[in-house]
Image 1 (tube, rainbow, N blue to C red):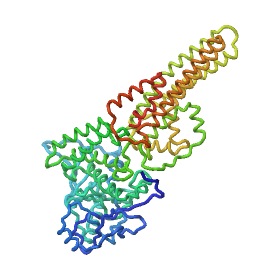
Image 2 (image 1 turned 30 degrees about the vertical axis):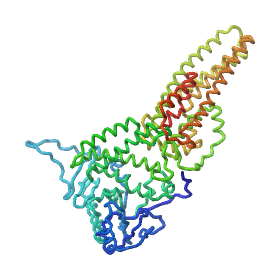
Image 3 (image 1 turned 135 degrees about the horizontal axis):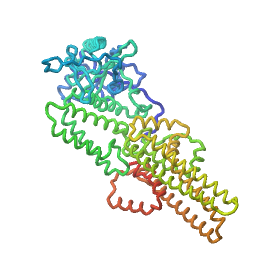
Image 4 (image 1 turned 45 degrees about the vertical axis):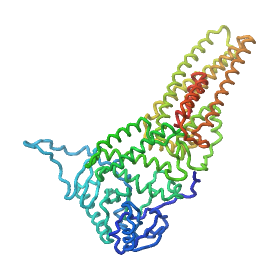
Length: 608
């Protein structure tokens, strides 16, 4: 595990790390194994960590003597002048606006002429600009490709203004590369898009090298805005090599292939890689007692594996853009999940629910929290534990959250049913009191008040349960879940407020039961003899002791759970262990209320 960072670092990616040796010209090459990232206070042309500086001839001689694989990182150019054009700036593939800012049709558009002329036996489509080919993604999105310039774009090139802007900016990029004698290999492509702000049109771009699975630029690129979670780079700065590998390699490259699946032929090795990763995740879900980091359920992973096997059998030399879109999308999700779990680092999160920090500062809660928890019989506490297991380091475990919310909805429906039964008991109890002979005594008045309060508490259980069932989304996205939990985290009580909210139906139900029981005891003590009173008190104390025993026993098991961070375990459970634990749990099924209460914080149902 790593300690919390003192500061959040900003980093930039040094431009153009994917040039060929033949294009070096008079520029020097820095041979170094250091990552292509340097701190922001250095000027863009400064070398971060250089080994022996050699010229192009020495590098060529070295490569001829010691042939290297095509994807070896020989370093980067020591260019003093970058593109640095105000209207042409870098971006990451995830910043492409295909899914976020789709153009809309106007409701006042002129109706098109749908007349089909005679002898029309060919498709009539608009002719794209010269040199450009229009391609339709399998999901329906349109983009353009220029084979000569090896460029992809989502920009509307049928718009003459956008076309002129795109071609002018492409000329600027080509002139810059020609000026510096930069020649990119065939595996490199340029991707750009046009962003309209008022009357200005800005081009944003990136280069992709499919051979090395890397994204690079002709300018410096500030990495921090690319990361979703604030301070993420500062936390990873002690292992900056992993940042560069994650951000500039697999993650954005797989996203690029998903958006432009025809840009590279699907290699069989990539299918094998996806198949191998999926098989590991299935085995991890089946055997990891501490919880798997797999982003999908076993059923979904099995479907992914089946489809991957089908693609493996049907792949051909021509490739398939549908297969590439699927494989790259799943690879992107896998890679991004591994990135958030710090894969490849000493403090990697290898089990679900573990924090990567050795010291996690806890937000001070007001004393009123303890008062509220006591007034609610400590019911929000297990709800809080189950939420904290799925909200680790401000990360959302989406799959487990969906399961937890479904379980909560089932619980709330059960509480509504039990509260409705309790309402009938309340009404019957109040009706019985009205039939008592004579003038009402203070005991009868007290019992009537308590029974009325019990009636209101049961109504509160029903209403709160209805509202929670109605307002809880059935299948929220990970982004919505993260925003929802972050909003609660910033409130007065923090995540505790969410635990209190989830526990209200059960807490109101318990209050209704306690108040009704108190009303019954008041009348029972008033109209019964000492023998009945002693028997009632003794039986009540026995039930109370049994309830405390069961509660403390479950708390001890929760503290010693293998999902707890203090006792990590990745050993698979044997069948005998599973059977033994199941029988032990069945022993303590005392009543329907206790069973419902236990299910609300069972780690096997919420954390795994």
